[in-house]
Amino acid sequence: MNGILAILSALIFAPLLPGVINKTKAFFSGKKGPSIFQLYYDILKLIRKGAVYSTTTTFLFKTGPVISLAAMIIVLFLLPLGGQPSILFFPGDYVVLIYFLGLVRFFMILAALDTGSSFEGMGASREAAFSTLCEPVLFVSLAALCKMTGQTSLTGVFSGIDSWIFGNHIPVILLILTAIYIIYLAENARIPVDDPNTHLELTMIHEVMILDHSGPDLAFLLYSGSLKLWIFGSVLSGILAAAIPLSPLTHFAFCIGWLILIGVLTGITESVMARLKLIHIPQLLIAAFSFSVLGILILLEEL
Amino acid sequence: MKTIADIVLMFLILSNLAFLGISRLKTCIRILALQGLSLGILPFLIHIPAFSYDSVLLAVGSILLRGLIFPYYLEKAMRKADVRHEVEPFIGYSFSILFGMGLLFISAWLGFRLQIPYLLTSRLLVPSSLFTIMTGLFILISRRKALSQVIGYLVMENGIYTLGITLVHEQPFIIELGILLDIFAGVFIMGIMIFHISRAFDHIDIDKLSSLKE
Picture (spheres, chains in turn red, brown):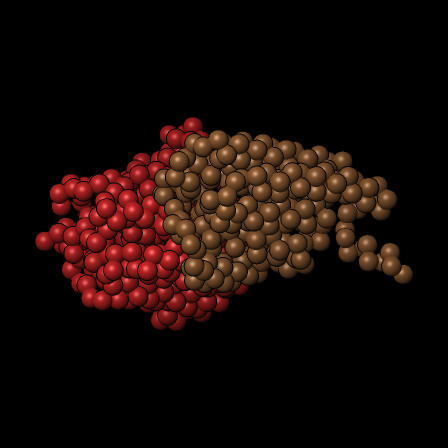
């Protein structure tokens, strides 16, 4: 029951998160900004349009958005929200989750290369390079959470973290939260790594890969992008919400609240920071990696 | 107390990794100052009668010297010697951080196996101090500027200090105070030396000094 509630809320409310981020950014720059529901309007508009396909593209270009959305929905089935079991869980399911995200990336890169545009090729190569550095961080961080709770499935991990474990491992939890937050920014093409508003192909990473998509395809990509934001955000909020013992329903509401707060935090990060130079991004990701490695090291010490 | 001590030691480890990855000399000096300040409060967190005469003396001395006077002198030396702002490493920043993580594993492996006869507040103490010493050594051999070598030396000393307050649990802090005084004299002399090197050669690139022997 709770699993279904989690998936439905993700499918319905995920496009709100980019709206929250944009509203925060608009507040910081003293503007009114687009409506918080802007992404819903965009998606509805794009769904009703037709798609334009370049003659150089093959079926790979069309499979990209479809697989992207499908894989995100499968990931939602694996991801618990609010301390209750997800619909699908088994030992080691976080590996499957990470590889589904990898599958999305693989098909996105193929679709971008399929257009034959040199700019999209550049974007694809950057995405591949940076995600190689992101993936181990996620693996190590989730493995550290598994070590902390003694569980091997995501459901077990997120229902296993209670206020007692949280209080005993504050240093490790801080490290892991920082590492996952950096990865959340990097994977969702947010500011220190990539600027979602930039429109200069030479510096874009994620945005340049979806330049040739139009109509329903673009709508699928935007929607799955917001789902990705929701997925990474709910990993963070799942840890944060465990700080206080709560009844299931309030726990769930607490998780949603944290998700929105993380969106606001992202908006603040984007407002106070400039984008990093491309050559400095690997350093940031390596820093995140060292955070997560340090976290698991401290846990191993407690054997 | 244990949690706060853990957080301080975690900051120690992270700031060591930051030394390996940061290119600005001035930022390195600032982090060194922060490291000194955080190490200054460590005696209160580790020892069981927290506010003894010795630990207050050590904390005050440590905060003054490590947190304020050393960084001040280093920045002054940097300004006077007119140093360029980059660290100029022999080994790249990303690789340095990865190497640092290797060192972290070695020191964790060593530190958790080392049998300490006392009951420690935080088991992170020995590994993190070993790691700080190793990072200091690595900075000493991998950076080109004389000023970054002074930083490496001070980082190493921070490590020895951390190990010291772990191990000389029963002993007077007078040893520590002696070390602090030595370091103070050392930084003083190094500052003068850096100034003279840069006066004589227009730079503080120690690589060039090897041409003196010919």
